[in-house]
Length: 115
Image (tube, rainbow, N blue to C red; front, side, top):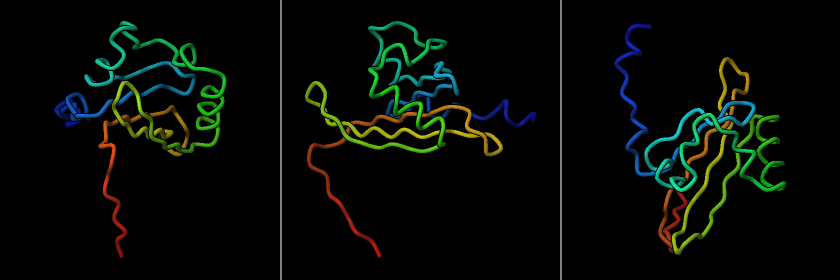
């Protein structure tokens, strides 16, 4: 579609790391924050993310790809608290890969229950 050529890459400068892989684990996309996060590893586009994960993580990745599911958790790394959200992405209902969004969050965060 012609209009798609003019859609901006809104995720490129977003203040969270976004990494997208295909159904085999090959990295297709990294926004600026993701590239900055993994800079010491060089350009990871085209690399397989399975090569840099332990067996537990590989099992989770395989499960997400097989089920089309999602996974969310928080971590603390180098003094920063982060929320990690991983979700399968699909085309026409078929799982095509995974998207991971990693964002720095405050150590103490308000939690609201809304009606």
